[in-house]
Length: 167
Image (cartoon, rainbow, N blue to C red; front, side, top):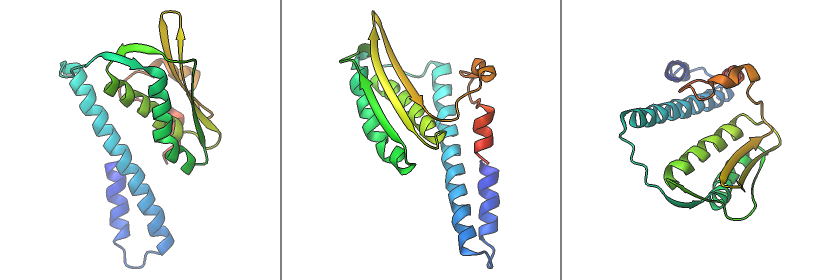
């Protein structure tokens, strides 16, 4: 992303650049800058977890309330792309977890869902299944091919479809 940002900035310095081109380039710079910032944040968080420097502050958390709050916070972003975002629950879904880290993970899932969904919806669901609590994020986006799902939890890996959509 940094090379792309640098290249677009060099071209923007051209005096005869058409206005529409500048607007497109600024959009690409912003997208690559956001991607770079997210990558740096992910790297810092991964380093904290691998070094044991992350202190998880576990307490009672309601996944249903977390899901509804996340949907509300991300609704403007989803609607800006013409998507709907909903949160569903069967009532309170209590867990013992770090609410900040859990909200951070949920927010990342929602941002990815919105990013890779061009039409349709994003749904967040919190349910209790016996002694288990389940938090799901579903969307009508491009999905992850079956053959790439094994790498899903490998740090800093992306599905090939995600790579192609970044061009």
